[in-house]
Length: 231
Image 1 (tube, helix red, strand yellow):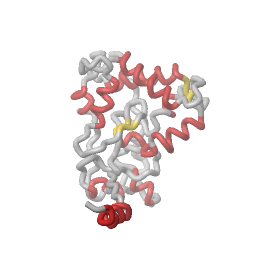
Image 2 (cartoon, rainbow, N blue to C red; image 1 turned 120 degrees about the horizontal axis):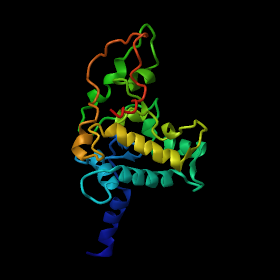
Image 3 (cartoon, one colour; image 1 turned 180 degrees about the vertical axis):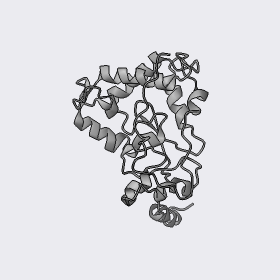
């Protein structure tokens, strides 16, 4: 083809808009707070985390593997490598790494979940008070923040590892939290976790329709789950 004939085609290609289609699908937030996001409707984000943490590929997750995965994520969050996740690094986690965990962020729907289900929390009421629209839209089934996308009721899973409340999370605290959370997930007390066992713990999406009002005197179910007893 003569070069002169190619010029209109090149100009059309240069002017043609580039269309990028994105999906605001909900991530899976790992027990230690790491987000795993779907690229397609068929992506299993819980399985992505599980197979990453299952280092020897035996389809079982042990406490040691859980801690090793926590160590890896801690190193990612500890940007200055001083052995602590400090307030500035915690802010970076909440705003850059996993912004979906913010309490006032709108709940994202799961891949394949109808859009109307993702908006089901818009009609939540609390006693005689009328909370803000953002508040009503983001409290579903007693879950807030990262708990909406996780296996454990931990709205901010990284900050929750700060055992001494000094606003700095050490590697020892992060490791301790990983073992405590493993115990919470290991309901059979088998000392290992399988993917089917974890899939059974995934909370269902919020139900469509108007939600019943909650009494102000009703116990708040959003408090984190207690550690299991040794019995």
